[in-house]
Length: 481
Ligand code: ATP
Image (cartoon, rainbow, N blue to C red):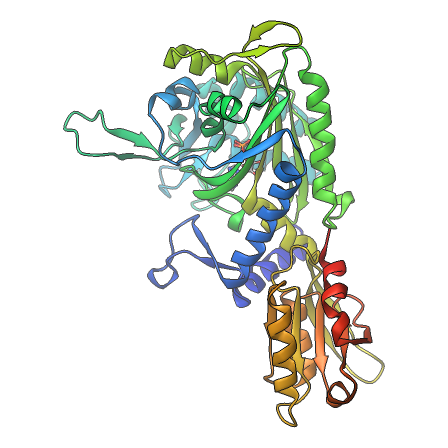
């Protein structure tokens, strides 16, 4: 990571903690690796992202509905979906440091190193060899590549590696208390299967006609081997997924449609388009006939935030086979029964949260000729900002707090509002800038005379005087997307 990127990332992480967005889980017990808690402002930001997604995907589309399925599901589901046998990461241990790594991640790091050093040929060759080995699940070949490219353990600095082994990423636990182990259940590693197994329930009860979609937001769990980059890769995280059921043969049109639609969603809240790219998969999972990642340029490089996959009829057919229940739709237009094809859009809520923080964070130099000054600011889209506005009485006396409270009590019926009367007005503005509040409403002595206040805009820092009676309308207009 370049030094300024490295620094930016560190600053975002400490900012997130300092202002109550994200805390390490179980911190007073020295933390739990790759598990995080969202603080008071993080919970608000996360909810606003969910609302933005739900609104765009479910409420704005008459043919998409949302569900909330359970985390625990029948264990056979994970057999049918392929997760019991195939949801693995290839792992390798260093015998000296006793540290465990993902073999493909070690190789990826080496590829990045080659690229940085201008050794493009080497990087491309290794990428190709690694892809081939992964596709063939050739574990000895992965180990051979690690040896050939002289990859050392970042902790011990040695090349004393074990063999590469497969490691299943699902967490399991016991349900009830059967002695023979038949009570083993999994914590779901994705929310999608809860949608597939409810396909007919929703289709019938909602009288849905193809094409239609089922969406859901919920927790997923993966026992990730490597945990790093803050909330980028967690063991407990949230997904926002939508499965769109289509007539076989039309899937490529819909794939294109969702690829474009989803990118627009990302950009509509002010994310920098230059930081985005599509990464088409050349190596497809056995059930997919097209797949693309929406990648964002994080300080540590371009990484996947969302996947769009054309999953054919794989999942529904598997459930049909394993459950013995028909997973078909009767299409009256062509008078045929078929197992629908599926286009999936799957975005990590926590990754989008991180992207939003990184994209909006700025340390702005405000120095003038005679005074050094700076501020930290989150340029969050107003619809995502935890607080829509803050009400600030200029002083703590002369009836200003009472007037401010009156305004606050009215506005909080419609918007999530902050109120602050502590410290100088300048400090209070800076605090609201740092947590992304788009507008500060300042109540001063003139307010008592003519029922007007000033609105200060976070990004431009400009102020304007407006009538108190106009506040609801003004804020509503400014915070809508
Ligand atoms: P990766 O290659 O980064 O492990 P993936 O391809 O396994 O991700 P999918 O199974 O397609 O990811 O999951 C869809 C989305 O869920 C991802 O695009 C990502 O945003 C999110 N996601 C997956 N794993 C994690 C995790 N461990 N922590 C946070 N978000 C995750």
